[in-house]
Length: 92
Image 1 (spheres, rainbow, N blue to C red):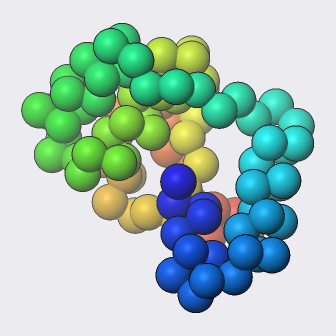
Image 2 (cartoon, rainbow, N blue to C red):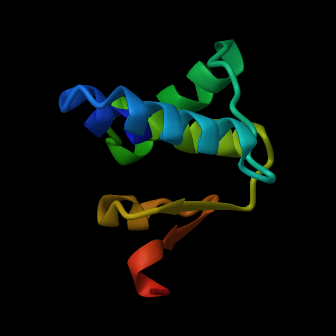
């Protein structure tokens, strides 16, 4: 969702198509539906960490899928203990 926002804001369907293609063909990336299990974990995260709903859903999905790390540029997620939060700019 977040990857596609900018292309929608500026009305660039070519950019949107490029991002969409990258998402559906990216190696080792799974796009998963939000279901009751993910929603429950997201609610737990929001209760403990006061995450915004989109962040809680993304991190919860990582946990439900047994991901060991969550890669982001959002510094606010550093407070999450599990999974490991990797801030991209720390490595670039």
